[in-house]
Image 1: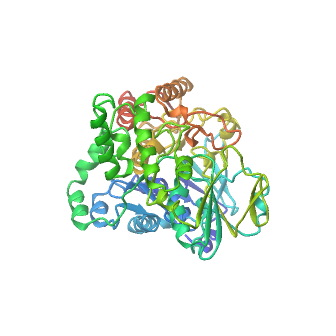
Image 2 (image 1 turned 45 degrees about the horizontal axis):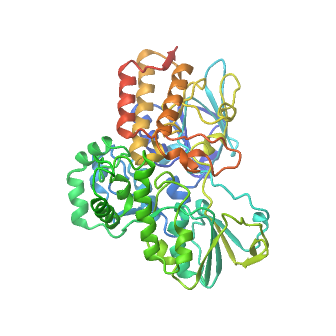
Image 3 (image 1 turned 45 degrees about the vertical axis):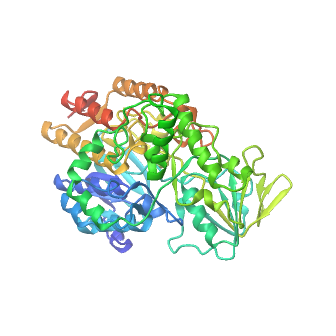
Length: 542
């Protein structure tokens, strides 16, 4: 829908549902709502579909799950007609896929682009949600569905002078659509997380000099990326149903790696080394699927962590630089595991420098330099690979208020509280797609998106069948689920890392472990039990 179309919309319209966001979650939600015969409106701040893959266009951007699995499963014809060209979906290919889906199902006619939702307030009499946008449009809906994404609110670093830099500044999460040429430029990159690990080799190949400012070393594994052979693609297409079903039975919703069956200490040292060698050669997430206790036992985890450190030391020529790149402050896998193409090899280039800002932080950013104490690093371009206000940032940025006038931001001031990551107590008819305390970011995202969208559709259908107008989680059910989420997390090594899973990258954000990490198989089984028990924990009313 163009801006001209948008301006033709009446001052206020009513829909059965309003969806915020036109990424993979919002698109599938719209498709399901339409199939149910419901009216829906989607608001999207970008000028196109794709969500994460619309905004993150930095050099080297690609998914860290293989394309044959990181894709929709709801339509078998779609599965068969789309031909992935590469092993891992790159940003351009994933955006092309998103646009193909939007075209194939004619989704754009119900999406208003270039429009940010400013507020969503629930009327205490009617129970309707009133949504207002930055374009001045107003709409009401029975159901409010947040498809706002888990990594969609870029985080700027709290460094003195960052806004005063007079060269070019880019955030990996808000990359110019026309691309950036770094030829002959002195470039500084702040951050060494997943986005930086993908971008740094590409930038280094262009720049006159690249200086990487690293606060925390992260574990990165070779992706072994490349073209997807046609015969491999067709073989997987032939057994797509089997692959999808297998994914549901795994911890992370990824069929390729299955579920490990042995402890790291059930085998000899030599056998363990060989298993790690095979996983390293396979690449991707394989190493985290080798043994059952890598995320449960610190000693088991250290066997995998030290194996990866040894590969870093073998790859990087300068021993001091190699040691700086070796993570030693968190167990492997407890922060997002990065996948790369020649990341560590990049530090062997003559035009690349690594600066440790862990012990001596960046003092300030001047008009043309990054300053650390008395050391001045002159740069032409500044790349901020500083991550996102993950999982809660996008929802908290909207002024969402329930029928009592309570804001979602206030209700989450001590950390997010949800029931199944799907709904929030005291916020009737408001739904989250892969919200906090669901597997979400610790799973194959599209698999989890489809599961949540289907649950939301089933909830709404139950309301229609029963004649209900309102659904909300009971407070005790939500409290129990939050406790369960925390108990599961505390049985693992995850809380040992200062990760964005904990909100640790955002100053002042409560340190609460947000994803549900008992696994996709367990989560889906729990949800199925709840639904079978007449949606236990949900309260329905006329």
